[in-house]
Length: 203
Ligand code: TYD
Image 1 (cartoon, rainbow, N blue to C red):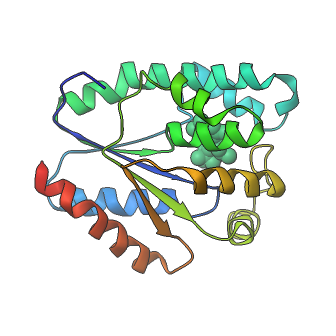
Image 2 (cartoon, rainbow, N blue to C red; image 1 turned 60 degrees about the vertical axis):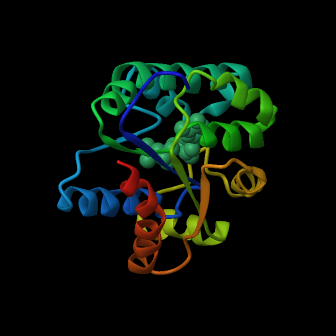
Image 3 (cartoon, rainbow, N blue to C red; image 1 turned 90 degrees about the horizontal axis):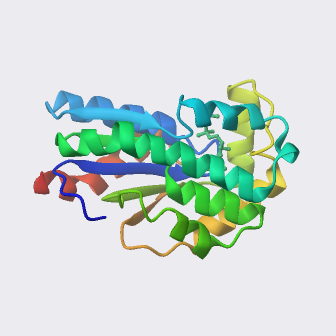
């Protein structure tokens, strides 16, 4: 990452149903209350590639692993070019729900080489912090099927999620902080606040 920027990029990662989106919203509200300029965003995006990816949720078998990876990469390139770089250059605190570690873990679990996936993401700004939420897969699956009243989609099938969790577990990068997501929303929120505090002091 060579481009000068003043903002902060904080990404929320983990398997489905770990509550990361809830925590992202809570953090956004807390930072806004402190008067900080916050931008919340997510991947897959609502853009043209993100929409194609959402269509794949129910029939993943129609594309190859490489084609699937290409779609996630294309979506991210568009996101970086049209949203992320601008916000970071403007000094915003960007909170992004999923980013390239999701690609490493999910497409890695599907069979692609994690190092290769990481290399394909070279263009994407390195996060200042990646909060990696983990909880037993059963907990996440229960949250999805009971609380949200949703079925598991093709990206969320339970055995696959176990493999995704194993990929996340292997990741060793200096900007990753792991968060036990099996506790209460409030307790986790306080952990998140503690973890981002040192970064806010640098702003
Ligand atoms: P999710 O955050 O659950 O989005 P939504 O709330 O719109 O359903 O992400 C959708 C799925 O896409 C999720 O199961 C993880 C998967 N995914 C990948 O496989 N690779 C990626 O690079 C990203 C960003 C997501």
